Length: 259
Image (cartoon, rainbow, N blue to C red; front, side, top):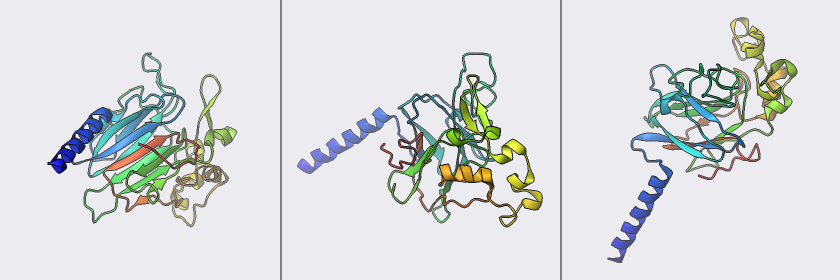
């Protein structure tokens, strides 16, 4: 009888916890999006071809808050944070970074670069690997870390050692109306040159080497892709049904995430 009472008590505790967090999902992958930035952000999602839009493509996330979104067990796409948004005006773009045609719900639209991109490829089939990486190939706006809840030590992409915006060269800077640097373009985005974009005659790893610009990105964020043929380790063989994506992780390089 006592064992039954304990089982019932545990079930009630678990049910109440799930209802309080609002994170209840079956046969889906749960993505916990944390905003540790000292300002609000507007996370956005865009699926790759053939996959559904998740979380309507975008939503508001106040500073210090967590929001759960759900993806199918097999899904591929990208997640990024928009900053400095004002959706209650007719001004377009509505966001200083990552804007998707002035919409709150991007609904499949890709955000305007430069932004820090979390790239995800989930596989329900356990014989296939799921991949997650963070890319600065199109530029940077804010830092992000990614981990899984079960094995944070082995399966984590750490945040940055410092903000790229603080060390961004003048020719790559994106500033808001007040003159504050809010994003940093990649050299490919800024100059649209084959040698920086790793295309045509420079379309192989042997021909396309790190540039002085990509090295700035790499020094600040060593766990991210700094250019097309960079080789940081993505999260491979870290299949999970729960991932934590934290924007502005505390201490820049601090990988610890509490959920």
